[in-house]
Length: 379
Image 1 (cartoon, rainbow, N blue to C red):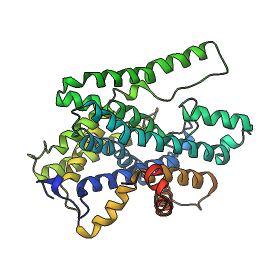
Image 2: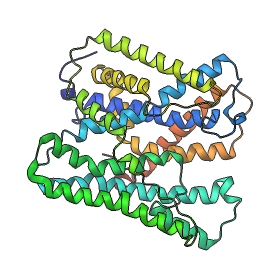
Image 3: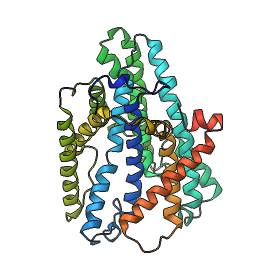
Image 4: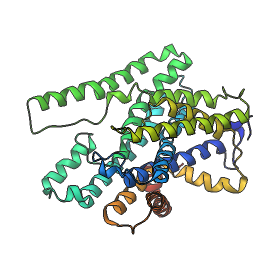
């Protein structure tokens, strides 16, 4: 492990190795989350679907695997802290540039994928297909889906709704951090846009719902995403990226990571066994501590040179994997019946199919400029 000049540890193409490695681990974690949740029915309302009573190994695997799979989002948020909060915003033009190159590009990609996922679910999700929607309902649903009303998409896309709102306030955080008081007009413009999206629009929808005008609507951009625990991860990521934990010895970081992961796993095991089972969320204190140690560990770890090209490639296409893998995973889960096997093996198999399959699809799609630059945002 290396504890010095980590931002200077770059590949021949100028990419920072440890940031790519952190993104590599993060996307493996997130894709694993959806596999373990599908196989074990972790978010199912039915206790039977939760697959309890499978034996101590299966239940231990479920807890440990789920904790690992919960670390992906904190890692991505901390990476955002490292990469975004160090930006300089000295003029209003810098703020608009951030919105154009960061927020707008992400918004366009998300909208396209919301549309793709909408049609995937409309035409292949057994629960929705059974409703036999009319052509008018499909078109109406597509339009509503695009404006975040009554969205029909995959649960994993909550992250895009959250990160879009977080990105809306990133310039405010940077300006406050850098104490650039001369940019208050830009801050006010951002705040006004934020109020419109997270207060005015929801109020209008609630009013329509109250008078039952053309049915009920649900607006999926949540005010809770603006000022939430996610900002804690972003701030800590920036803090770790500035090497504020450099004073810790390497062995202390490793021990801290192992202990915090074990404690979090034991806690999750207990919570799964509770009468009202609970899956830990990103507000879990144990998960936060484990994420801190993991991010610092990844900052210090020395990635072997022969692995760097592969890790860098997965890192570059990680957003594409995030979008594509859930579609593959869901289609397999809906239409493929695996032979009798251990739940742990089924989880790994489902994850492997969705992960490798998404890479194969991206290898083809990235040959098309539009897909590479707009749909997948490969940099």
